[in-house]
Amino acid sequence: MHSGSLPWPPAEGDFFCLQSRPIEAFVYTQAVGEGTMSPKEASQMFGRPFMGGLERKGTIAMASLKDVRKLAKNILAEAPERFMLAADCTVPSETLWNHLKAAIEVAHRYQK
Image 1 (tube, rainbow, N blue to C red):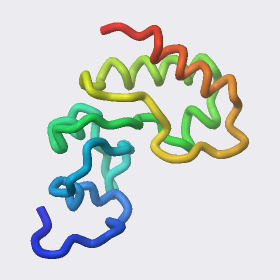
Image 2 (image 1 turned 180 degrees about the horizontal axis):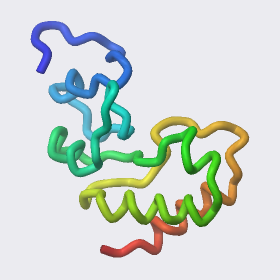
Image 3 (image 1 turned 180 degrees about the vertical axis):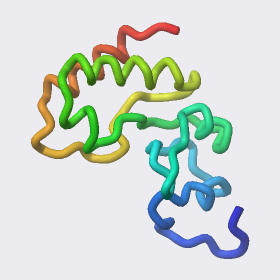
């Protein structure tokens, strides 16, 4: 945890400086520096609701519908209770609407 004045905005992938910020929810990305963080790890670290899981330039933007659905299900299976499936940032404008709708449909129908 950082001490003193915290930098804003934080360095890319530096979630640790956000732990003490008075935020009620946050946007999650799996990439943290050179590593990754699972939804479960993010939940344990922050103890707050969060959204994300879908890398904006990854499967949601470039893969098949089948792959989008599969990824959405896998993310939701790992996700804690207080989680909203979303892209980690603004998706590219070329992203097919069907891909976005497929991920949304999976989230709406998903049950643990």
